[in-house]
Image (cartoon, rainbow over all chains, first blue to last red; front, side):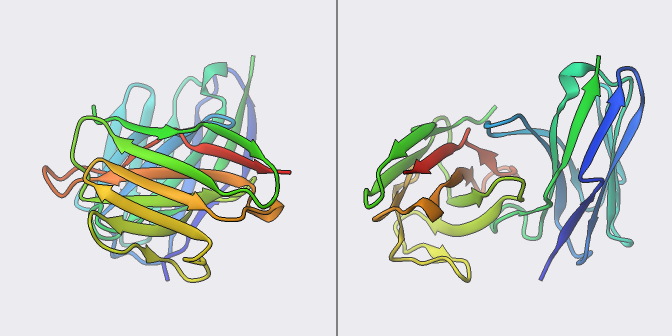
Length: 113
Length: 116
């Protein structure tokens, strides 16, 4: 059974810092991996999706990498801002959308002004 | 981009009430819809998968008679929490997927269910 672990569970840093969130998964036979943002009491916002054949994806200040063989992904946030405060979820997809995603518990991020 | 609408966003009701949550794909036909549940400080857990016109497939530990899922059309799936109790209080979120165009799942905004 696929398990997804996110480290750290919580992180609080001053504004402007670059930071890395980690995600690991036990079964490397994934179709893709997604990073989501979740604000308190809200739904999910998809940030980046990395196909299994890709090594990384970038969107603005966000960069996600994927090392499928070792079962790891990182989300790099550059020049963090208070508006980045949220919970960041990592999820793996085994079957290209035809099956449910397996989520980690998330990293609760606080950016101090 | 693809839009999934989920209603209601918030429900507060008494124990024993049945609650229906709707999930609609607004601009595409969803081959499959998924229902997830999220308890505080926990990850989203898949409850069930539903395909239009067929019975939903439930994950282990999810009571199918408790959580009734109807996927009547390619744009609408409903989750009914029957005779809800306080332990059913949670955040329920749906997603929709189409087999066309190599698309990822698209998520609704979720429903916060509180049973008193």
